[in-house]
Structure formats: structure tokens, C-alpha cells
Length: 467
Image 1 (cartoon, rainbow, N blue to C red):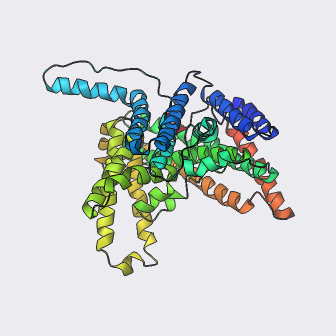
Image 2: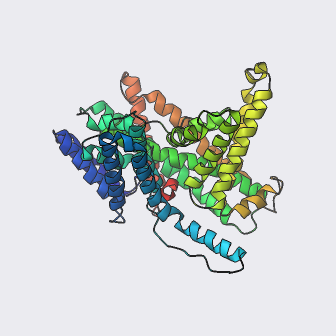
Image 3: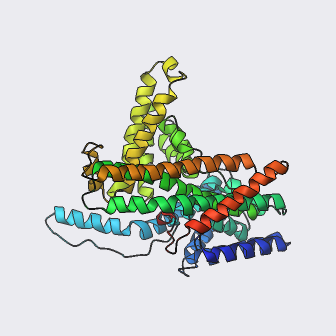
């Protein structure tokens, strides 16, 4: 079920109303698990079975760690193998078939790649990572294994963040699941306003820009100038799309009594690549840092830290999908990050801290990010390489005007995100006097009008449903 659909507009009020009408916490959580199963299995009814596998596996593993502490390592391996195995079957089976065919061809035995043709369950990369965070933290002694299967199921399956995050940690969300919670009209109102802002980002900005981006990347003979303009538009599109999903998720969860973490913090204002990754998809970045980078680095020195950072970024690329394009995307950021650190380390501290330094570092950071966006959005790695090999200002007849048009639409979208975000924060949907209440009403009215006006019959899925 999509957040931006009529079915969700009916589904959500029912779920919220019943959730707060129930007095017993266990009944509330049972209701949320049932609602999450309906939400996830709306289009494909068997998908909730995958959630059940992750829940039961990691619940049993964590309980086993509490009962047999000396076997924690083996039990954690079972959790990781089960979750990553499920992820690998659905997401990387075809990549494995292609690799086998390539190896056979290299050995002189050409063969057609084997393809499993399996449906990729929406958000499988998100809920498997979230579920694994529970067993990893229990293994590390940072969390006690829970006795209630229902509470663990609610933590893993909670529908607002189920399909595209934020990826929540058990130590943050489980205590909220286990708390009784009290109804708050202010939180209900602010949650609805946040969800509306998320829908505005998605429907008004992301889906509008997608029309221009998709057209440019599918044009035969599109020149570099047009494709770079489309890449700029895609950078705005993917931020509006993903940040929009996150804000709907956070707003919906707030209406249900849960606080989810921020996932985006003005990433295109980042002053370095490290700063960018702290601002972009922060829940995934921190997950990779804590559960992949930190173990890989260990107690090693700078060389091992650099190797761990590079491998983590490549794995982050492959997390998006089993293709050379995503691996190259991760490798590009790995090389750029290591080069950035080396150059920054060689510069005098007074230059790095100079008040004019952001005038250089912000454009440089976003230029590197933009190359990554091209690799990410291009249909193939060869396509992206072809664009990168030609001067970006190269334009076929008529394409310069098209590029300027696309850039204009991108500027409109980016400006709307900036202004809308600033107004939402200023409105502070709780408290204030009559003036603040008037501003809140005007913003809500404008958001409802914009979503209704820009809504299309052919609604697009959120981009990260594919991951």
C-alpha cells in the first residue's frame, strides 16, 4: 500500500482510531502488527510471511543468546546468515546467475545467464537490517533479549517505516513499543502536518521532476548538457521522494505514539563528503558505520581505517542492488572520500577553518555528489561512462534550451523544498498565539491544495521501494 493513495487515506484513520481506543498495550501492539501485515501484503498477500521469518528467527536467536551466552557467536551467525540469505535470494540471485554465465563464457563454455525471476519484495533491505540490529545489539551486550514475541514483531513490522525506513535501532524503538503511551492531540496534529508535508514533497516536487528526468534519460541521442541538467533535477527529485517518504513515515508514527529519527538534514548544504553522509539517509549511514565499518576497522591504524571505509561504501552501493552501476557508485564515493581526507589533512588548519572555506567546500562536495547521482540514475554503467567522457556543456541543436528548462524546473523544486521546510519548522505545529495558528492553517490549506492539484492518475511508487 502506498502512502499517497486513497486506500491509505482510509486505512490510516482506522488504524489510529483503534490504536488509541484500545486500553491494553498488548492489544495495541497486536493491532499494529495486524495493520502492518495488511499494509505490507496489500498488493502481494504472501509478503508478510517474509516479515514473519525475520521476526521469529531473530526473536529465537536473541532468546538463545540469553540462555546460552557461550554460544552467542554461533547464534549471531545464524541470524546474519538467515537475514542476508533471504535478502540474497530475492535481490541478488540474478546477479549470481550472470556471474556464473560470465565465468563459464570465460572458460570457453558460453551459456545463457540463469535468472530466478523472483519478485523483489518492497523494502526487504530495510526490514532485514532493522531486524538484525536487534540480534547484533543483544550479542554486543547493549540490549537485553525480549521475552515478548509480540513486542519484537511490533518493532520489526511497524508499518510507517517498514518499506523505506528510517532504519530504526531496537534500543530506540523497542522501549517505545513496550511503553503504554498516552494520546496527545498536539502530537496527532503535528504528525498529520508532517505527513502532509511529506506528501507534498512526493506528489508536487518528486513526481513532477520525474517527468523531465525520465524523458531526458530515455531520449535517443540526448547530449551531455541535457543529461547533466536532468541529473541536477534527479538530485532534487530523489531528495524530495525519499525525504517525503521519511516525513510521511515520521508523521504517521507520531500519530500512533512513536518517535522515529530524522533521516535528512539539508544534505545539499554539506561542507564535506563526511558531512554529506551524516545528513543523507542518516539512519542507513549510521547503521553501516556501527555494524559494518566499525567491525572492519577494528583496532587498526589509518590504512585499515581507509580500507574499511572504502569497502563499507562499496557494500553500501551494492545494498541498493546487484549491478555494476551500484558498485561503481559506491566505489566513486570511496575514492572521493579517501582523496578528500588526504587533501584536507595536508592543508593548514587555518585554511580549513577559514570563514570563506564553505564557499569552496560546499560546491566541491555537491559536484562530487552530482557525479554519483549520474552513476546512480543512468540506465547502465556504460551510459554513465559515456556522459562522463564528454564535456558537460556539449549540446545538440535545441538541447541547450531543453537543458535550461529542466534546470529551471529543478530550481523551482529545490526552492519549494527549501521554503516549505523553513515554513514548516517556523510554524512549529504546537503552541503559539493567533498569528502562529493562522500560519499553520494557511500551510495546511496550501499543502492540501497542492497535493490535490498535482495528484496524477498514474501515481509513481517511491524510488526506494526498489531497494
